[in-house]
Image (cartoon, rainbow, N blue to C red; front, side, top):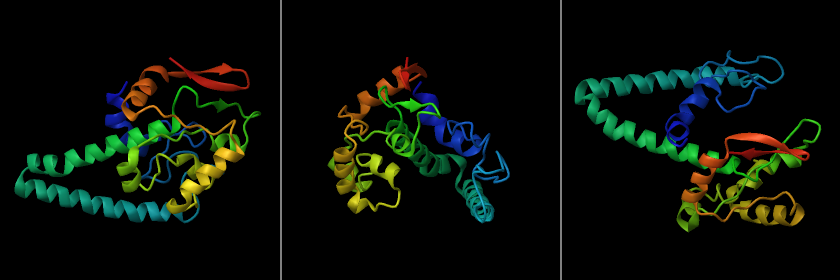
Length: 203
């Protein structure tokens, strides 16, 4: 329950839209024609062209890695590029997973959902002074990002305090250290079950 999402979660999301929900269908972040192409398509308007342009850069980067491996050996590329890439992949998925998943994060049916309830279906966590500095507090002020993603990081702490005050019944903060929180999410957040007007994770 930890190895699969942390090891393969990010590529699975990019290539198939895994965990992205059913609204857009099976998407692909490199092929903008995949998935639903109507009102909810993943890359509307000019974004499809930007994806194709990005794909050119990806092909060039892969070609560079291929050339590097042919000159220096695949083991050097795996050690100096592959290993750090997997580390970033693991951390990115863990961060995202812990921001959006826990036993007390509700899910709402369509008739119970509204923007603020949806925006507050995330949780702030304690990442400590060093990680908050390096990541501009995104894990400890993530709820504010959902309320308004245009809030700059240097105002996110003030925005978080305002959200706590304005929506005390919906704002979520979990003081559990990251490793125990990760284990709880992996072992207890298996499926959602209806509980009153909301759905919550059960193991």
